[in-house]
Image (tube, rainbow, N blue to C red; front, side, top):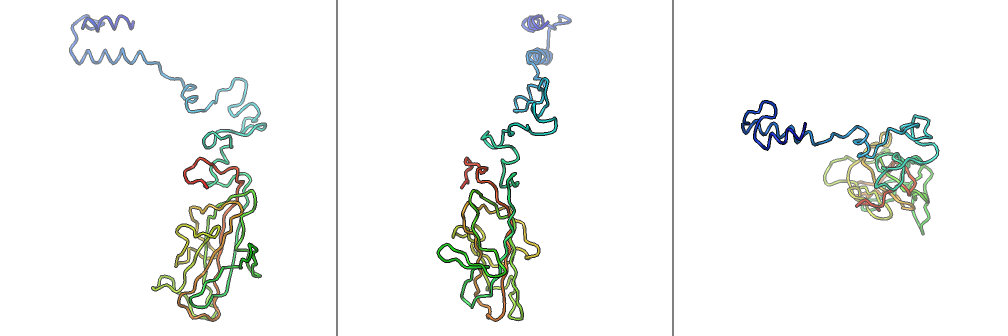
Length: 253
């Protein structure tokens, strides 16, 4: 059938009626012939091209040992970022906690320092040793074998009968700083606002922290009369096994 159509088109006649073809009719028949040469992909081929294999003769679409409901029970799922063998669920630690994640919730408070002085919120560090006050568990070190993400931050000023701090007034009375591994964090190295209340910390996109990093928050008193005030902070997030951090990202640490 196709060869007859092609022969008619070469002769410039209608394949059915034998009459001469107009240019528009010729184009129409040419498109029909061209389309017939193309074989459409099957669903199996489309899925295979996407790296998905749902048609496993004699087995489950999730693998022979999956029980028909999820990942293989004998071997970990593969795929992940850059085909590195991590399971899909552990491939995006900056978006979702990994299977081995550990939550952290750090709190610190400190008496307001004198004007023009700075204080570490929650505790002090000397020779790499941390001394926290009775109410605090920050600053802190990221535990061995883990990286992590800070996901919320909060700061409160407690007047406690002393002079109040008014957020937004210029020049600012206080500034705050978040340091990771003794370096200021981007956009949080010096700021003059409370990103959230301690009872309701504000979510952030995420600040990456690495194994054994020191995480510390500071308050600097610029202008307030120092009497009985306190500053408190709260930082929340999670740790994940450092083996899940993809090394091929442009910003990988």
